[in-house]
Image (cartoon, rainbow, N blue to C red; front, top):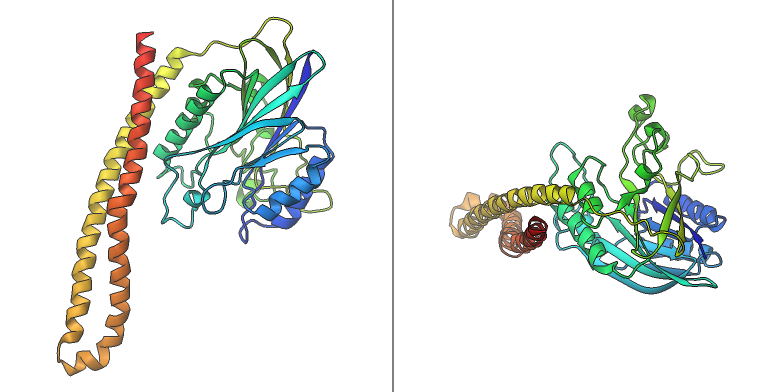
Length: 402
């Protein structure tokens, strides 16, 4: 018996105190989804448990099964809602995840990774097992000087390997989410080629690039005013990627951006991202149509990934030296601030001692910070990158000998 499967994904932009109109938008998202006939909903950036509970309560009649992937300090922000029974759920935390001290970016504090919900879809004639993966890769922030390129590459490879190693018995594999990578980027090609996924946007043979940007589209109210005036296309960084299992036939039916440009009776959009809706038809009758992986493309992306990660290792080493230099400098200043008040110069005692007390605190904190970054943090980052390189090299050796 053939079944239809509708998969929806949206980055909800749910940051407390930062995201504009958050409460109104979350309620509107929950309201509109409760009236749709979707099988699976993958949401990202649902950072607040209260927002997750709001959506869950609104959807429980139409999508009774759900799972939130708690991780890190503030939560991964990733959750999945399903019409069908969730048999298993698991969260794979990435080994490199941004920087703890860059509070203005905050990706590390989210404890990002890729979540998996394994669905059991029951029909009168047979059952289907569908693996739904949802992820939110590290943001780019600055494309010209991307400090997180290696992190995103390793997150993409981790995600690809996780899908490859956990999808063996699945009838359909779907990865949906904000991957923070554009179609020409290496991270996108890793996720596509390593596990052999298909981009549903490309499968739909879309030619209207103007209407399918999922971030910074001039159609979105939260895009900066200059881009809206200039009708800039924006970029496609949200995806629904898939591949069929070995014994089923999966026919792609449609790809769309289902939400209107504005919330009804409001002057703003549902999020700063656009939602995606993809529909499949799954059947155990007919000829299975799983595409064979492109081994040459996989080899190319692995070679380039290894090269860039090796460059990242050298950069980490330079950063480690800089932190040790910071340790030495901070210690010198700390010792100086301790010795100078002990002198018997009346001017120092009367006028400089309060300033030196403040500097003493600053130099102490600076010394501790630099020591921690030079030892614990750089070691963690170095091991995360090195682990990824070794895994990629192993995969590459297998490809070369095939």
